[in-house]
Image (tube, rainbow over all chains, first blue to last red):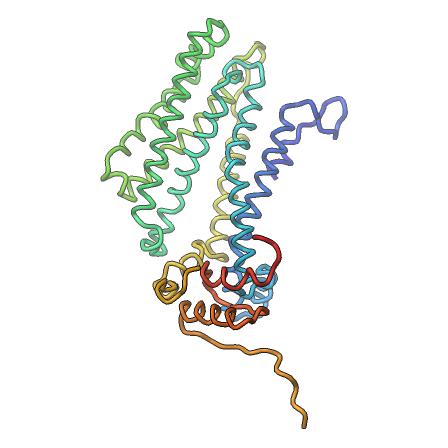
Length: 321
Length: 58
């Protein structure tokens, strides 16, 4: 969906994608990533869909889960192929995390707009994605954990480790901001210098200071163990980080564009419709999450089964090859 | 009345350990067309069973 929306159209040949535009890289990066993620997600669900099929009492849901579980019977053969496929997809997905955010950052970095044209973008975008990704996961997982009583499955250790990842990636993001500021001065380029000045003193300066507070200063409280292990504190810190990451994109896109090489760009303003679109997408996302929690297992059932003591094969009784 | 030849045999086990032990013994007895069913994945019994069923190395 995002890929389709991003297909750049040439003005001279309406309806034909502009193949020379860097945006076309984005289409391929995002669609590849979306395909692998969807496959990884679906394959991970197959054994659980079979459990839902076996447990459902309604004929229609039995049929739907039955079709989705693709004839899963839990045979040794199935498990073997399942785990192989899952491992291969995990191996493919890991480098794709790096490539997709790198390519997304190239959309900006290959442009000439001051504030976009910088080589720090790929690692800075990858770190930012992991940073906001963990913040988003915590913000969703903490209320779900509380409401459904999943404290034994999503443990304090999981929360604390997520907090540590946020702390580390947050520092990489902070380094990115520092380099951006440093290059504004060191490059000696007057346009870059102006971009930095505009961020600090321009009409959107408030958003830049808010960004520094949300993404750099507030998350430093995660050094305190007591806050890392408190779900309430983590929920609010994650919220602050998400606001900060939104501001980062706002500054990269809007603040850079409103003072580019064209005087007319200064007239760019944010309309009510922009806010409505933004809030609407949050609504769509939340609706999808609620549907997921309602009709699919929010925690992998079969992976939890493997943790049970009954699932253990006693090594002493089995002859190791 | 002539009896049909035995097509196969099935057995149910109480624990994964018993299943793995049974798979091991069945394999040692020379049987190759075997399978096991479980709601829990286990490397031990998969290794024992699967390599007899496919030529594919993984």
